[in-house]
Length: 203
Image (cartoon, rainbow, N blue to C red; front, side, top):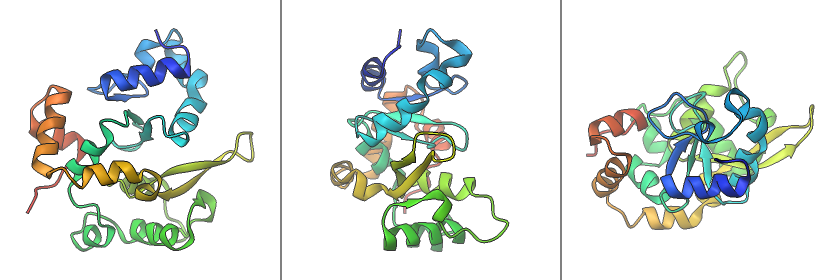
């Protein structure tokens, strides 16, 4: 059973890729804790502290509302499997929205930025572009603005600057090899893994 941050890191390192809550095709932290439906309450700051300390990776890779933990050993394979991670190329290929690109470019210019200071157009939902940028490993949470009500929030920075070693290792992996390795690790056909992780055809 998982009841401490250390045990959570050990679990993630063992499975490589897992969900925070139940209900996905992946193993989940929630299913390994003694808290059941109260798991998120008890583990809320784990996702922040362990990710910011670079003991694992945390992000909404599966989609909005589906947080995922990744071991640092498996992270380069996930990055390589995504293929093209250039934000401007992705925008030109209609795989990144104009809003998402503008948020990325703001962070690129100004460095880590609190969510409330990102330049969203009026009446624009904030969640979809942030999730899209996370799914392409373009941005990630790099710090907290506070830990109490009224101050709690995230600092967003570029993923490559926060996990440079993972990107360096990913650059040495062929996309096709990374996808095959990841599908084998997940124990599912490559087509299913690609659908779940939104891989695009290479070439």
